[in-house]
Length: 198
Image 1: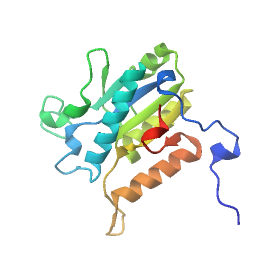
Image 2: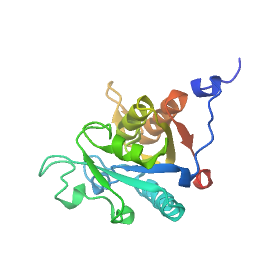
Image 3: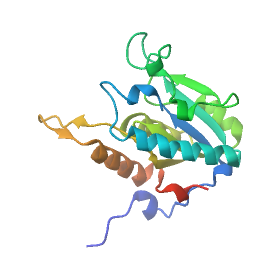
C-alpha cells in the first residue's frame, strides 16, 4: 500500500514555504497566560524561543508583522489589563507592529485582520503561536476561506494536554502533531526546522 498523501499533494499544490519578505507574519496569542496556571503549555518555552528567532528574521527581512492577543474578562483568563494577558516580553511588539485583540479563536472573527493583511498586498500568511489545535488552527482554516495561502511554523506553536472524553488524557505533543497533520491535508503548508523560513 502506498504511503498516504495530503490533498494538497494530490492536487499538485505549491508546497514551498514563502520567503519572509514576500509574506505577512501573524503571531497568535503568545501571551503569559500560557506560561503558568490552568492552561500552561508544556512546550511553551521552546515554542517562544523558536518564535523569537522567527520574529527576528522577519523583522530583518522587512516582513509585515501582526500580533494577535486574546482578550478575556477582567480577573479571568486572558485579562489584558493584567500581566497574564500581556504578550510575552521576548516577543513584545514594536511600535509599527499592530496588536489586534480578539474574543474568539479565529483571529479574523470580529477583527480587522483581514483588511490589514489585504492592505499588505501579500497572499502568503505565516502563522505562529498558541494553541496549535485551537486559535492557530481556526485562523488557518478561516484564512484559506478568505483567499490567503497559509503557512504554519510548527516549531513556533504549542498546545496543551486535553481530556480524551473517556477519563484519560491526550498528551500535548500528540494534540500538536494531529492538529498540524489536519492542517497539512488541505489548509496550510507546515514549515519545520529553523531553516525552513528565510
